[in-house]
Image: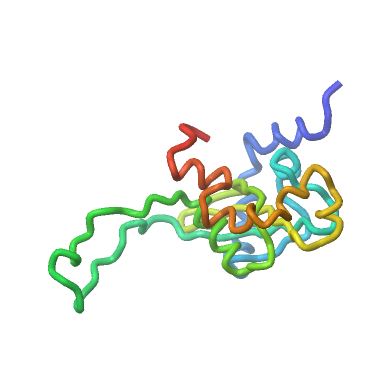
Length: 172
């Protein structure tokens, strides 16, 4: 017997291009960080820890593609500081998580996943948790995130994409 989540996973291996393209047209018109009612990829969200209960919030984040190279400062520096030696080490998913965290500082990033890309943007859904809610504090599966030592996980590189950016995971 095969469950519903397996069929959802199979459908996302070859998504309907017309439907996804129409969705992305709408997503481009919206804000860069936008709250959604429910996850688009329910199978992926549940696998990463999402539960349909109070305290869990899902955001869709749009990140512009390309341009990771830092711009050269024009003036007001020492000459040796004017050169560009490094590119940005973060991946797009980690940038999306950081932007969601910066916009919603009362929530903690649990995890995230890819939902699409077009010529200009990547789109991710970020699963965030409100650690102050009693539903989260009383749930033994997720109450670890309410602990003070687990705050600002995304800024310390402790999410899945952060670990990949730090070189702690080979592939995704």
